[in-house]
Length: 218
Image 1 (tube, helix red, strand yellow):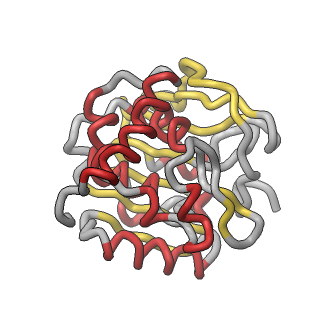
Image 2 (cartoon, rainbow, N blue to C red):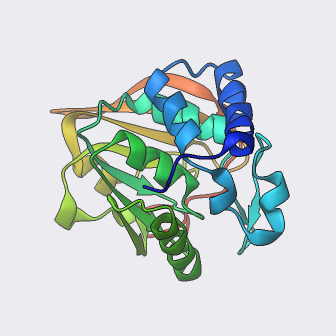
């Protein structure tokens, strides 16, 4: 990892931590991860001045990054302990991936747009984050070769969880996904049982882009 942030950067990072706390995040490991990941390193250069606002940031292809406090709430719902093998669907510029990498043993992240995947790789490498693998492809297919996963985080909306992701989740493990049509979702926690996926708590209401792929929107 890179050297610790300077005083000014610490103040900016603490602004995001405060926003996450106000949103209900109280897991100290998640909050500490937010203190370690400089969001400015994971947004386009023309958006850097907005990096420490608790708000989405525009990225190419009409996409936006997830609001930091919302990412923190979703990650907290996974209940990561540190040794997990995690799958993320929707990399964007890699900020959420970087948070997951602070909290898990290894993260595989799949991004639909090849140029976004490449930018995320560069961003993560520049921060010395090595326990990640970013792929471009259809996130709704998951990555069976690396399964089973101890946790899955989906950052796009669809009315149900794609079946390949269910089958790649370890029994007893958790999956978090925005459930809805795209634009007004219930971010929901699921747990894998021997009989399939069991719906649990709703983390929050949110607005996400649609999940595209073979097992999502065409």
